Length: 232
Image 1 (cartoon, rainbow, N blue to C red):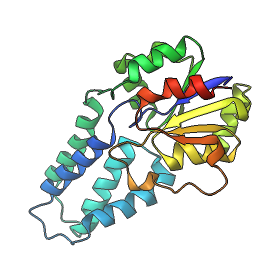
Image 2: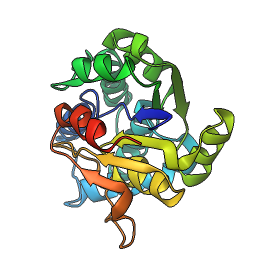
Image 3: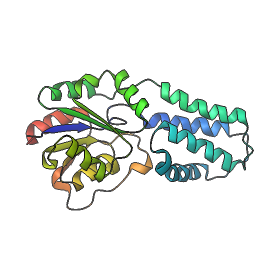
């Protein structure tokens, strides 16, 4: 039997990437009056990746990257008023409602009756805690970990902190890069539930040799039955 079942939050339990896509669309609209390069989105992607080691993940890092990109592509002519409009993108994202995906609440409710549940999410601490509170799901989780990144080292530290055995740990999430591969690398088990939208930064292919501890399901509503049949 699994000792702990852990869930990712953003784009696993609730909508997230859609707000970033909307933020990018607004960013395009704000800069529409400036001469812009054809590869604006590629330049924004590069800026985001470059800024992750400095600002981490989440809305704050995103808006810093929007502002930096705006300054660069407009050759420092972007107005203060438009910078303010870009900042407003972040405020709107932080205030956005928490839209749960189908099957989330009953799945957590049923699993929490038999297993300790853990939430492992990365991003801005205050934003992630706020979303969890507003989601109405916090009561189902025995442990909550808000981390700067999801690497094997971070998961290993979580295992040590909670005295967990990797072979009896199950992680459920939508990101191969963050939720699946690091856990498999450490000897844990993972359920991949793809989301309709995913940030290109999070995409990875599953290497050969790890499939015996991995399964892909269509939606969270299938998780409980899979665990019932395969839980250790």
